Length: 133
Image 1 (cartoon, rainbow, N blue to C red):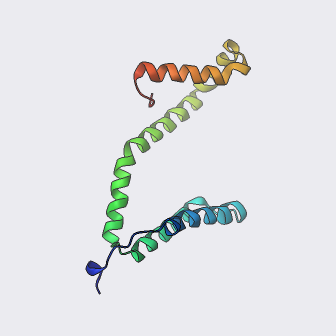
Image 2: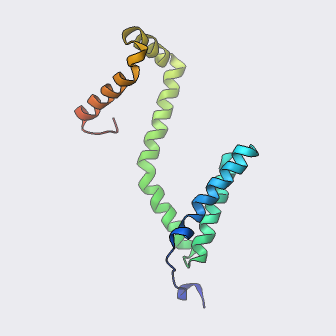
């Protein structure tokens, strides 16, 4: 039976948790205990998921197509996070964040910082109509 004639099997709940459990175990043992880098461990857990998908009857082209589709959907969020990271880096380098922290602690008592941050971000979200800022 060739790949085009294979039946795609449905995953049971237990089998669907295998890639997640493999990732958790790889991260706990590899990163937590052995001190290995996270990136190769995540690639190994992706390989476990790919082998499971191949075993379930999906072709390599279907797996790659699905990964590309999911990354395309997530790309706007990834770009926002990259831009926010770059903005924070430039603000730290220029002293803007330490300056805001200094004046924030002068204007608001430290015991009210969390509640003030919550209300400030809530008001901004309501005014702009989005939680993305």
